[in-house]
Image (cartoon, rainbow, N blue to C red; front, side, top):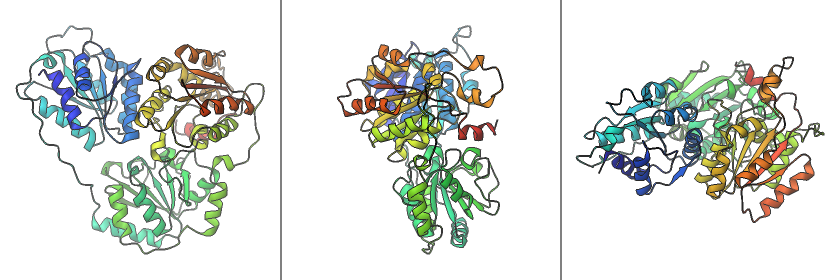
Amino acid sequence: MTVAEFVGTALARLGVGHAFGVVGSGNFHVTNALRGAGVPFVAARHEGGAATMADAWARTTGRPAVLTVHQGCGLTNAMTGIAEAAKSRTPLLVLAAETGAAAVRSNFRIDQDALATAVGAVADRVHTPESASADVVRAYRTAVEQRRTVVLNLPLDVQAAAVPEAWLPAVPVLAPVRPAAGAVDELAALIAAAERPVFVAGRGARGAGRELRALGAASGALLATSAVAHGLFVGDEFALGISGGFASPLAAELIRDADLVVGWGCALNMWTTRHGTLLGPAAGVVQVDLEADAIGMHRPVDLGVVGDVAATATDVLATVAPRTGYRTDAVRTAIATRSRWRDVPYDDLTDAAGIDPRTLSIGLDDVLPRERTVAVDSGNFMGYPSAYLAVPDEAGFCFTQAFQSIGLGLATGIGAALARPDRLAVAALGDGGALMAAAELETVARLGLPMVVVVYDDHGYGAEVHHFPDADHTTVTFPDVDLAAVARGYGFEAVTIRTPGDLKSVADWVAGPRRAPLLVHAPIASDGGSWWLAEAFRGH
C-alpha cells in the first residue's frame, strides 16, 4: 500500500464523512483511495467552491469533512474557503499535495505551511512512510478534538512510497470538559440574583439546545443566538431569534434591558452585541467557552467559565432554584406578536426597478417548504434571508460569514444540501456573489440537487453603493445580466420575480415535480442601505 492509498483509507476508517475537491495529478491517488474506502466525493468546478462545500457539510452534520487539492495552485485556489473554515473553527481536513523534497525548482513549489498558517489553519504533514499512521491520526485528532482546519501536506515522493506497516492506533473518545465547581457556583449565584437574564448561544452551543432550554426555563432567562447558531431555540415561546445586527426591534429592546447576559459558546463580538450597544451599562456579562483564550477576547466579562456548554448548563441547572425571571406573561405576548421581522410594519418599496426585498423574502418564506436549509452569501442583501426565512433548527441555517467574503453562498448551499438531503436547500445570493460562483451552478445541476438559488439583484456591490452615497459608483455598479438565462444554460429551471404576483412561479416549482434545480432571479428595489450594513461598517 502506498502512502497515498493509506492516507485515504485511514481517514475513512477514522470517520471522515464526505470529501470535496478538484482532482489533479498530485491528489489523484489519495482521492481515489478515499472513494475506494467508501467516502463520497464531489468534484467541484473550482477549489474555492470545494473548500466551502466541505466547510458547510461539516457545519451542518457536525462531522469532519475532507477537501482534496493539487499542489501549489490547487491550494492557492482554495485559500478563501480555507480561511473561512479556519476562522469559524470548522473541523476540516485539507489533503494538499506538495512538491517533493527534490523538486526545488518546480513552478508548483510554494511555502504551503506558511500559506496555511497565514489564514489561521493548522499546517501539518505526512513526513515519511514510517510516520504516516501517526501523522494522519495527529491531523485527524487536531481537526476533531480542537475544532481546527488542518492542512495536511502530502509530498509527492512520500505519497508514492510504500507504507512499511499499515496500522492505526486507537483514537480515544474524550469526555466533555466540565467546568470547575467554583465557577458553577458563581454562575448559579449570578443567575439567581438576576431579574432579567438573557442567554446568547453561539457556535459552541450547537448541540446543547436541550440543556440550555432547560436551564433557561428554570432560571427565567430569555434565549437568543448569534447568527451562526440561528435556529437553536426554534419553537421556544421565550426565544428572541438572532442577537446583533439581524435582531428584530423587540429582540434588541429585550436584550438591551437585560441585567445579566450569558454568552454560551459565543464570542460576544461586535456583530452579536451591535458594538456593545445591546449590552446595558448595568448588565453583568458572563462568557462560557471551551477555549480559555476566547473569554474576554472582544469585551471585558464579569465571569469567565471554561467548560463544555452542555456540561456547564447541566451542572448549573442542578443548583438553580426555579424562578420566573424575565419570563412574564407580558414578555411572552410580546414575543408571540412582535419578535419576527415579518411582523414589523414597513412601506413596500416595490417599483419599476424591482421587488422590495422584504416583500420577496416574506413571499419566499410562505411558499417554500418548512423543512429547509438556508445558506446565505455576504452583501447588502444578506439580512433579508437571514431575518425573514424561518429555519427548522440550528442545522437549518448555514452562515459562512466569518471572513465576510462575497461568493461563498452557492457552495455553502451545495454542502448543506448534501449534508441534509431530506431538506430543501435554499442558497440566497447577491448578484455579485452569484456571478463569482456561477461555475458551481453546473455542480448543482450535475448532482441533481433539488435546490433553490435566490439572487437578490441590485446590479452592483450594494454595500459600497450605500456606504459611499456621494461618491462615483462606476467601479461598483454593473449593467443588467439575465441571470435566469445563465442558470438555464447550466441546466436549471429559472424564473424572474419583479412583483409579489410573480412568486406563483416559485410555488408552482415547489408543487413539483422539481425535475431540475430552480434559480429565482429577483431584481430588487433599493433599500437605501440595510440596517445591518450600517452596523457592520461601524467596525471598518
